Image 1 (tube, rainbow, N blue to C red):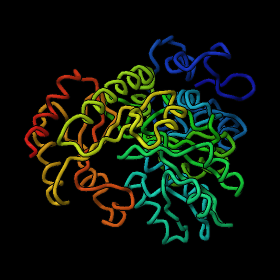
Image 2 (spheres, helix red, strand yellow):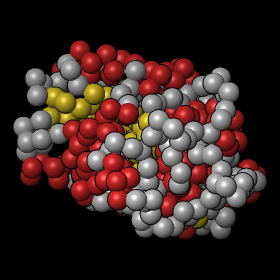
Image 3 (cartoon, helix red, strand yellow):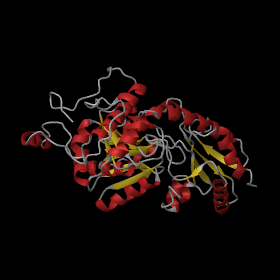
Image 4 (cartoon, rainbow, N blue to C red):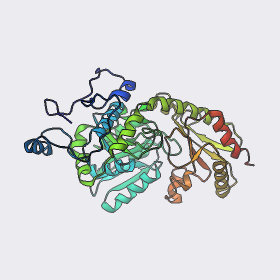
Length: 411
């Protein structure tokens, strides 16, 4: 890749006021000398330098160029630039997975003696990972997702991060991003927001005061369940000083192919999110009326405890994920009924992944949160009767019939 004057990588020539839908299909790097219209996939592990002096300058970070795909690759850079543009951040760094992004976050920002405040309603693997870092001296306090006072009370002098996921997995609890940002900044800490469920198509946490946005690109950014990917969106300074050294040393690297798939997924992100969210809301309304359903969780429903907040933060859209609780006289019966509903489906995919154009259904207590203790699950509000459904692009009536097959059999 040639470098323009000023020893910086070239940028795509776009109007400075280009809007998100345009950025989603245009931002990245300029085409190569071959003039390709679709972004190229660069699968080279290393890149050739014109001479030894140039190589030395590039390795010394005196000249911006591609060197080695563990930490610099054109396809990955295109994805990073596009996602940063959509999130409204200065920069972005891709990682091998969403969990890899959280690992990079901790390794880059924290040390023994530091403290994190985190919602106890976040993704089960996130809870486990923060727990694992206790062995290295990084402590985490878990608090209510929705109680701002608990977040404030949990902050200590050694608190360096507040970590929030909104909406949460699986009960779609929504936290007040702006309020948490004020708490973090008053304590000299950073606010990190997992924006996986909404994506920048519905929610831009940095505009609400967040410092870092974390993504599992495996979900809606890809959109078709093809690859594993992650990312952190933040300032260029954080990437240069904190995260890039971790990537170069630890190799938490996003592959060029996976970056390319996510890059192409971003082109249709807004269209998919709007349509899947509309179908999810319609399905949630239908579920609320079914006699076998005890409760439905979807931010677009007026019955959702944080409905008004969600509508403000998420552009008036509830998102494509809903959860519901089936009836049962006790936990064992509720679990059996949930399993029966899931097993009766013929259209939905029984998988713990989400973000696909194919509707996914799962039982969180035994899958995504199955490795947590019962106390941890109870703290997160995840009972044995809960079912999570990530709505895809199938016909809505077919999805209703698919769920009704099992729900109608519950007595």
